[in-house]
Amino acid sequence: MKKIGIMTTGGDCSGLNTVIQRLYRGASLRGWKTFGILDGTDGLCETPPRVIEFNDSTLPIEAARLAGSFLHSGRAGALNFETAAKSGLLERFNKKIRKSLLELKLDAIILIGGNGSISLAWCNREIYNGLQLICIPKTIDMDIPLTDKTIGFNTAVQQLTSFCDQLMLTARSHHRWFVVQTMGRDCGQLALNAGIAIGATAILIPEIKFDVNSLITCIKNAPSDYGIILVSEGVSLRGHSGKPAEIISRKLTSAGIVNRTAYPEHTQRVGDTTAADRILAARMADCALHAIENNETYVMTAINDCKCETVSLKAFFESGSITEDPNIPDIKTSDAYVSPDDPLLGIATDMGIYIGETK
Ligand code: F6P
Image (cartoon, rainbow, N blue to C red):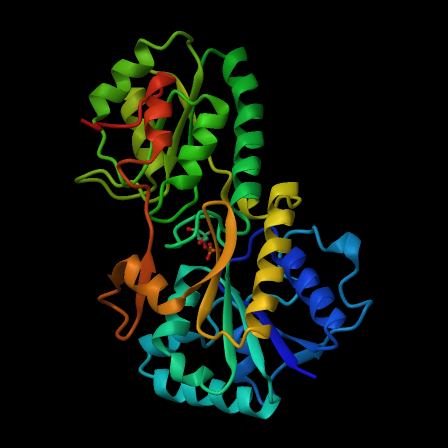
């Protein structure tokens, strides 16, 4: 009988509980025991490690669609890979995690995380020696290399779309514009997808340079006198600091365009999990359990060409663009961005949406 540990790390999103529930059910059917590690690596850092054993009533089916992580994802500011590296404690932190994993005598650990957590697990892989490490990608940012889908993204696009759909109605009533700042870190996928869904007038993303005068011209020539300008949080304007939506809003006001700013913020992470995300969670959980049966380790579940499969963490790490934080030694992440040949860029342009200076 195998002992499987499950943990969620990094920012939460919708679909985490669905994947946890599917993992538990699939593992039980195989006669395996499942343990939830509370608060991700924070829970492993404590003595004894904070762990619960799952049973049929731990996470009822009707709760599995709810956003957030039933296992929690770590306390803000607690000791984790990043804070440990920053304070020169990484070696001690790794030793502690390793000790806890050995004490728990797990056969496999399933880490449900974003590009940061998965990259860090790979870069510090010796702590998982002797057990199988299977990662499941989740993020609303869609910045994970080697997978076409990540758990939580579809719900986040839906949340942002619903938020903007509502704003569009008040925008129309008052003949004015809304500058909406989206999440997404340095990746523009969330803004790009929701922008197409709502028929935004402009979508500004970190990957594409834009010109404020062209943006103003596009708004002034728009077929309506109201609409939405989506600005991804990673957008920066040379010579300006502060929230990108505020900066754009001020520029529009100076050009005589009446506008307001709006920030959906963390509501993008907490929608009722969409059917698409629930199905994705079920597929990824199933793939992770098969990977354990097949004695795989250091792999991530992924969707490629509509198939759910595993890819090696080595390939995941090497295929992204490696980002090093100059202020945090030993921390490297593998990131994905909107590529210049993403078909959605052409579709947005054909819809008359201003997406920046693509030529
Ligand atoms: O990575 C997910 C994400 O929601 C980003 O889009 C956003 O920049 C960040 O996390 C917000 O983090 P926090 O929850 O720490 O405010």
